[in-house]
Amino acid sequence: MQADNNTVVRFHYDVALADGTPIESSRSQEPLSALIGARNIVPGLEAAFIGKQAGDRFEATVTPEQGYGARHQGLVQRIPKKFFHDAHTLKPGMTTILNTKEGPRALTVLKVGMSVVDVDLNHPLAGETLVFTVDVLEVRAADAGEIEHGHVHGEGGHAHSEDGHQH
Image 1 (tube, one colour):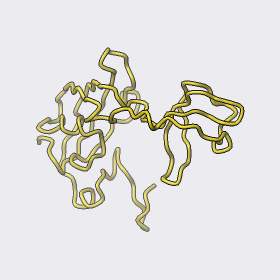
Image 2: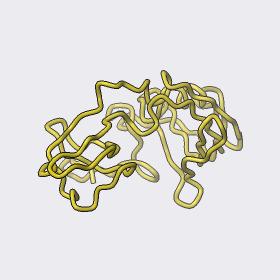
Image 3: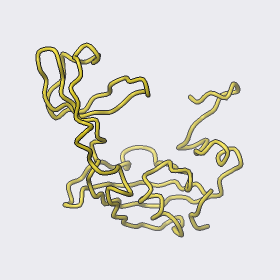
């Protein structure tokens, strides 16, 4: 079976910057699963799965527009230290999570002052061209519940309890 919209792919991946600097790999853990067409993964990688089947290995170069977006200078902000649960450990260059009205937000610390922290709210990979090396382990048709919910259930996906909440 070939991957297409409304199919589920199970896969392992490595991702690197365009210059070859490794970023992360899934190979030391369970494979990932994604519902193609539901934007569970970055658009450029999702598009590269179309037509692939179990056993395929492919490389996909994903531009910022098809990955984590361009960098925006307006996302550099100064935030009072009191909003950080881990303020005492913050150092320039590290990433942390800030709880906002819109939910948790990953950010990069630029500078730590006496009472404020300068942060970059861009995704750490914004503005980067990424090179994915992917091994396709399985391709299967998504079931009606997965299509309705917009994500994979079961192995490598989400579990729903009887009350309908994710766990």
